[in-house]
Image (cartoon, rainbow, N blue to C red; front, side, top):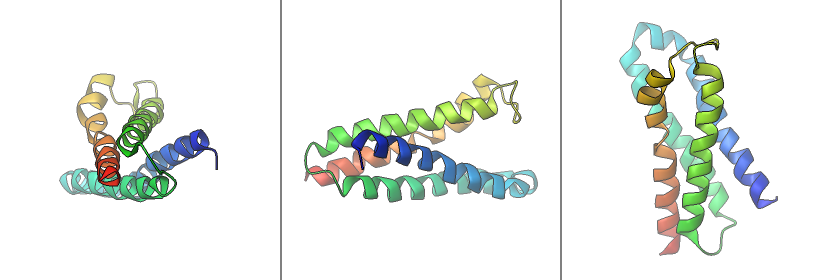
Length: 123
């Protein structure tokens, strides 16, 4: 598979699986919001590790650089898709400020994981 296509496809999957997980857990968000808020970063981490591991199977050099690239792209993909769903005129209606203070920070997990895996691959 083409490298760029793989990065974009994996980035989309890193966003969509947690999104679907959050939709499935939406009743929990209403009844026990703290548990929901705790489960989401765990699930995002799991998905990021799985797809980063799959991506790095085809990387033979410049591991840290690749970790930075995919981490920033996957982070950006997650933010962009979320903004379509969370900005005020959208179905989920969250202000940009609240989104940035809440959800976007969680996505920093993605580049932390990909850069960490890249670092380990470099060793």
